[in-house]
Structure formats: C-alpha cells, structure tokens
Image 1 (spheres, one colour):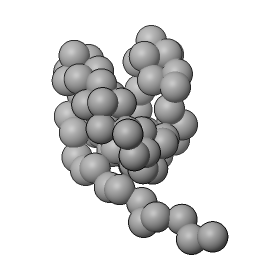
Image 2 (tube, one colour):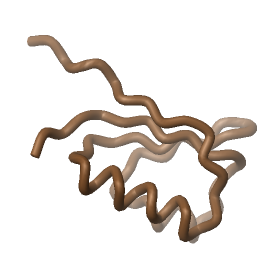
Image 3 (cartoon, helix red, strand yellow):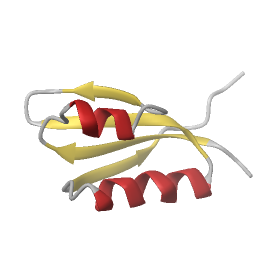
Length: 70
C-alpha cells in the first residue's frame, strides 16, 4: 500500500497515557492543540483515527503532506 505523511490535529494537550497510545507517531504539543504526524498507509491512518476516537479526543483537522520530490 502507498504511504503518505499525515498530520492529525486534536484539541488540547495529551497526557502521558494518551501520548503512549501514539508512540508510533511524532507528537507535537502546542498551546491549544496536539499534532500527531507520521508516514501511514490507509490501514495505518484508520488505526490512528480509531485510537483518536477511542480516547475521546476531538479531531480538528487531517492533512496529507504533498509527495516528496526527488
């Protein structure tokens, strides 16, 4: 499957337990949102979104980064 880099933004800061649930992602905590990013195929993207839902996090935005040139 094709992999793409995704940024998934959720409201608030994640605590240690929630950050552990996303150990396979880069977790950037900003003042009012947390950005989860990583290279995912479709199955991986759905798995991350299922974790977001299971933890009761409020999803704000999903972005797919443009393909890398080179």
